[in-house]
Image 1: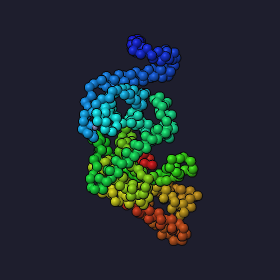
Image 2: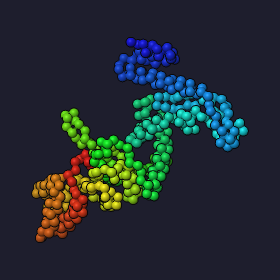
Image 3: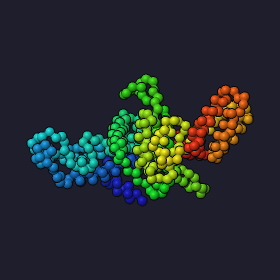
Length: 398
Ligand SMILES: [Zn+2]
């Protein structure tokens, strides 16, 4: 049974303490930790052996970019990379110009491996760290990576990686926006026929995000600023364990910007085109009553999408109007509101609109009530034409 372990023991006698840990492990969880440690050193050994073998192959030296003379080997030099399985070390040939041109270190083997000069960590490791840092603070990301993968990276290092990746992504987004401005449309994202046939839902809103008061330091009072966020998602169905089909949003894509509505508009339109706004039917736009967002809808999405007013915002507005008219403390008022909300949810917005209009015109009403009802009427009329629909909670994007 212990055939594999015996074989590994023969290969790596220096791992004896780890085998001892494996033997000593009484609980399953200790056993798993001990085996995982061994698996990691084994993986590092396999990668290093492969690299050592490949580094022996003959190097095709290219001509010097300055003088054109073929480069010459100046022998082997060590290289090290931090990776998810541990530090990986190998030796590879470095080249130099026989005319001593200043061209930096030339390592053809590094380039073959997809490494850039000065790269000290594996791309996959950076990717994982940046993804974790999207959801938790940098220090917590560092702790999580240590706990989950046994990797030691400081919060500061992760912060620097995020900065680098962020700068690169911003540059590529700016280039895409420039191309779009000249009329060049982006490619629609590749997706399965099943996903492409599903309803495309979209919406946008502002969220308050905490910022540092000054660059480079966490000292001082937090500054809250509004980041505008647009979300795209496909409405699919999943089968529950009871065999029931229930709706589920998936294939989420986000466009966000610290800026004004026009900054959001071009970014949201770019992402919309990538998500197939022009090719998909139906496309549903869901939004609250914010005026700027409806302007964005009119300017960009209106020819392709159906606008739907967020049910909860509509209900909230009805309550604000009705509580002034009928006195929010009374049962009569609450009943009227419950009934109106029910009708709203079931597509009878016109019906509610009529009643509000009639109420506003009834004689002897105090000024405050007339004002509140007129405001409500205008709100319902403007957005009602866009179709207030019964929206289930899963469709509420925020
Ligand atoms: Zn040269």
